[in-house]
Length: 277
Image 1: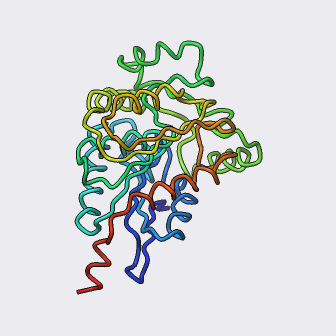
Image 2 (image 1 turned 45 degrees about the vertical axis):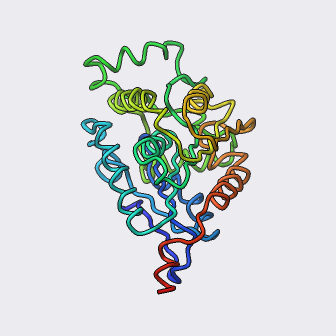
């Protein structure tokens, strides 16, 4: 079952393109409501499974962070050749990839919306030995251990959490645990991004929950303090966990994202120029 999606306006009058990246062991399904909202608000939206995700979950054990980067770069270049306004946004691992794109392409990126940016695995639900995870995953142990997905599944809202648990149990929308190999590559990507944060100069909106169960606000703070973007904003949520697109403050997040996009549009999109010719 393909979880990829493209939401494109047939009238060729979209405001621009928004490229979305999902989280570690997740899928574009977790971005669907967000993408539909942006589409209804006038944007063309694109989301695909990252390498090592989707129908062939076993590939998560061999995928490298460089493959994630290459995928993100190629998708951005493809859209940039067709749209003047191209924004990047992501959740968790996807947020880190969005920042990576901004670091590489600088002003070519119209803006970045980084949600639950995961540079560090230091959320409150991780075990007491979480400080040892970077050391453990750097050894052969990472090939033999999966960290089980468990309560609260990144969601504070109990009703929504119940629905997500059922979907995860079916295995239709993402993996039901976190392979240590995936953590290892995520931390390598994090290290790479932290070294290149001063390359980020495009507008950026960071949204992070104070109660994020997977990664603390430290991740968002590190990005905010080290990027060179003059136009940057960090919003801290107080009634959500990691999955901010599905939790109690999702409507607020959607609204802030749209406000950011609309305020960073250039005068014309490439599509509009083609229509005028």
